[in-house]
Length: 440
Image 1 (cartoon, rainbow, N blue to C red):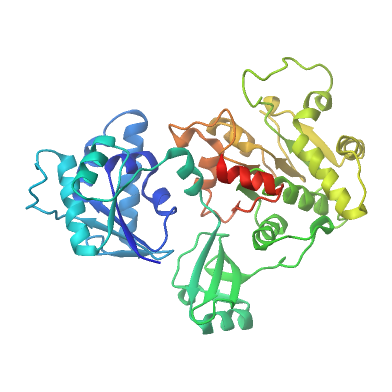
Image 2 (image 1 turned 180 degrees about the vertical axis):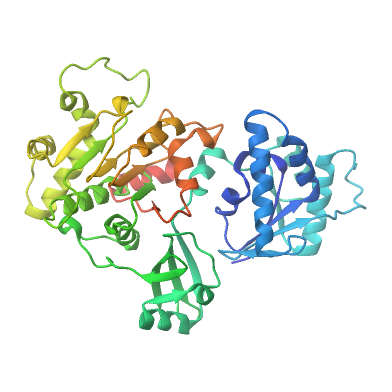
């Protein structure tokens, strides 16, 4: 695969930040022109979102210095390297050199000559037109598409020396020095041998050590994981040393199915410290024009038809176990009558404290940052399983990721010892839904 360089315009850093953009790439060089840092420096004093994003971008660039000298190339994971370029082509007759955009164009010209193929990444249409006119390759940064791509995935794939995999299987662990990588806490590392691509190993990074998986062959509620990512999800969900687990992914990627399977496994285990599942789901309509208004009755009556993700997955779990159909609503009612499941009204959650239970919070992409903070602060001696697809939901905020509660939560907890996240990328619901995501 050809290595490509990406030169970032200021508006890309203001919209996405450096690290979010980096996580969408592999085997690439990321170039930041000096003039872009100067523009960020002027923007950092502004109030509101723009000033915040400028300060965030500057901090992220500064953080890279701990890995090396940014005047040179600094190597990061996924074969990414970052460089700040202070020079530019001073002799191009097609550039007027009258504004910062011209200096960005001139830097792009220099980088193409000096480092090889360099793509200018910008959302400034005028700059893109000028760049293409003088032969510079360009790429725009699409917000909705890249929002999913830049979401922390919870796993990283690396190529290692063959003996490293042998050592991992022998010792059941690896030290950080063996990896030549700095993973996040509770991140999965998928290793492939440099001489045999069929020779692989997977570990989870904890406290400076890459550990062997504990639940690699476990079947919660007697389900069989269909692929590696489902095994990794089960690993996170089963480990009681990780209080909060979040799963993201496209609709139909089995987020709720796996969470519910593990939650039922744990509360039905007589040795378990958890005595019930608390179901939390935002009572938010898909669209303000698709509402039926006030609903009468008990909490169950009000919520039962919003809990389709739970009832349908209860049916699927029972089909796996008994090979026959059982009504999901009746199953949910039965668990509630047995005091094994409880429905939480999220509107009235303030003042609540959850203890000795598993909180299964579904469709969390619908909550704002403030809403989700209220839920997170309710957690006592409990475990929290969260699911969400950030590409769905009428409440999704597209102008400022700080207001997207689920996106923000995944981002700020990605290096916490108390949290684990995994992005599921394989659609399991049906071939039709898989095709839908490709063509829609």
